[in-house]
Length: 180
Image 1 (cartoon, rainbow, N blue to C red):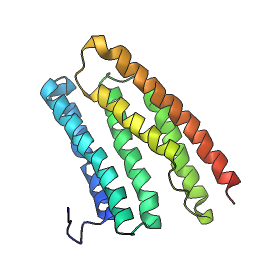
Image 2 (tube, one colour):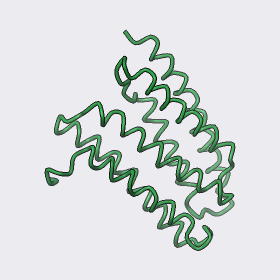
Image 3 (tube, one colour):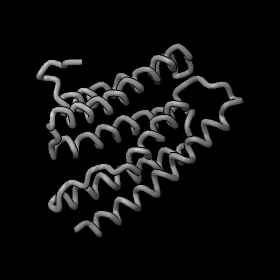
């Protein structure tokens, strides 16, 4: 598929950031308990997640990977996942402890990245990408109006995402200090 020239990876990332409030709006629509709006919200966040894949593939295919993009893309991911998690916790559909653990790690790593920026941007590694995928799917299960008989699956999936979040955060910090 040929995209117009103005549709750059960074353009897609900025658009993802600008559209995150739409996802939050749909989560809160009709008090947050309307299954139709829950499905709509899931679709919005799913499309935003797909845009993350698209901008990466586009950057590699056009050979337009930039330092700005390497920094902004993970920030956009954190804004998207953070907005969904905070919204879900406000609605009482996700435990606050999950939101706090994941956001402390994500914000902490973002601040850490800013502090070591003079050493160069450390790009996301495979573990970080798996962590992000698990977070996105885990949060997605909280967005969807699942039957309570599936909560064990949703909660188990999210516990794996939390574990990966902590482990990859520690690995990221360690790799920053062992980078040659």
